[in-house]
Image 1 (cartoon, rainbow, N blue to C red):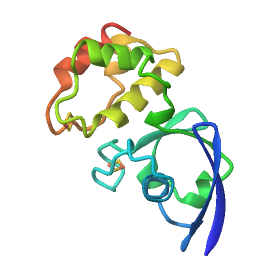
Image 2 (tube, rainbow, N blue to C red):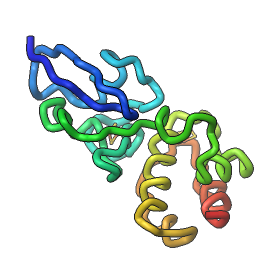
Image 3 (cartoon, rainbow, N blue to C red):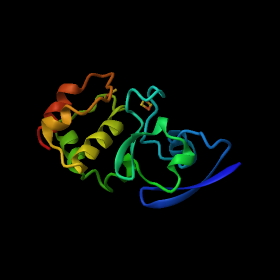
Image 4 (cartoon, rainbow, N blue to C red):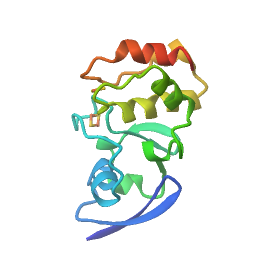
Length: 146
Ligand code: FES
Ligand code: FES
C-alpha cells in the first residue's frame, strides 16, 4: 500500500491506496467520505467531479492521488459552511437544480470563475459542465445575479 497526505477543505487526511494512479475522485468519495463530488463520465468531459486544486477548478476524475498530495483541495463541502457562498445563494434563489447530480461540479466551476474575478454572462460562456436535466436556462438566470 502507498500512503499520501491530502489537504482537503483545510484538513489533512492520510490515505492508503494500492496505486499512485488512483483518481482523486475515488479518494475523496470512497476513502475520505466526501460524496458531494460526483462521478459522471470518468473521461474528463462532464465536469460532475470538479473540485479546486490550489484554488483552480480541476476535474478530479483526471487527477492521480499522487499528483494531488501536498496540494490544497477544496470540495463542495468546503465551499461554505452554510450554503452562503454567493453562487449557492443564487442557485437556491433560482431553484437551479433538478436531480442535482451535476450541480456540485457546476457550482465549483462557477465559484472558481468568481475567484478569478469573472461575473455573470462572462461565467456563463466559460461553463462547459454537462447537465443531463437541462437546467441551463436556470443556470443563466442565477449567473445574472453574480
Ligand atoms: S466524471 Fe470527471 S469529467 Fe465527468
Ligand atoms: S440537475 Fe440533473 S444532471 Fe444537472
